[in-house]
Length: 343
Picture 1 (cartoon, helix red, strand yellow):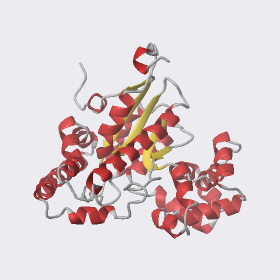
Picture 2 (spheres, rainbow, N blue to C red; picture 1 turned 30 degrees about the vertical axis):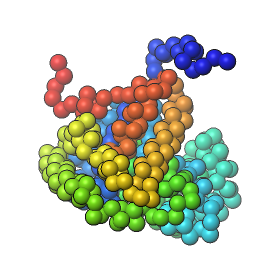
Picture 3 (cartoon, helix red, strand yellow; picture 1 turned 135 degrees about the vertical axis):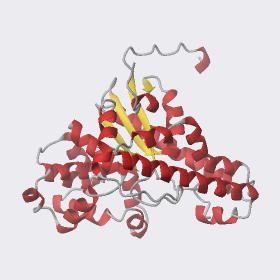
């Protein structure tokens, strides 16, 4: 039997699928990891960033929201309270399923088949299929009169999400609207949670146990300074009306290494339970799931150009995984977001 090392490698395609992995701060909320409160950002400040990204998102935009299959897993597991706590919008999705008399799989198949061209109907189908960003995308295309026919809960949810400060909406959905895309791909994978199956301790409890460790205290001090610097950079970019500089520096190698320190520290704490290293393993499993979902999305258009919009701590992992794929080439964020003239 031939071993992998003895097999001839694939011939590289002349036009590989290209993906730009853009690491971002979570703009819509105070992140538990980054502890950064984003300032108010006017829509106009996003325009130079969207102009630059549009050239590299021709065939698809992917965002860090749970993929429909992950949502379906939690929706079908347990007593339902866990799923609703994880996805507060789930009751509206079930309302959409009731309105359409469709289950998740049927709604997904009909949405992907594009059996209707009515924006509000497509928004309802996407929501019933647990495809939240695509539902917001089509809701944004519906006019006020069309929206009135939707169930009250659906109308309130999608109206609120369309006005969200989240980068998934303000960058991902807006870019998909501009480019005429049919969907926004949600690629996150939280199916397995933060710790391996059978390990009952909560991640929050693990970090609480590590609070007194000298290395952990050093990390917290460094993060405080890092977050202050990031906040200043973001506010400066907002003042200039151009977010490209802060996104460019956030995606530089040195900055990404600073952000990844939160995972490196878990190899230095040597917790007696082994949960520190288990947490890193599950973080890596989550990123592998994201890479898998992104690869499926890219299969829709071989040789195309895609944007993956994810939290900055995911970027290093996704770039590394994509680099090993046969038909995928990653794009440099620094080149895309250059603010000085080329030449």
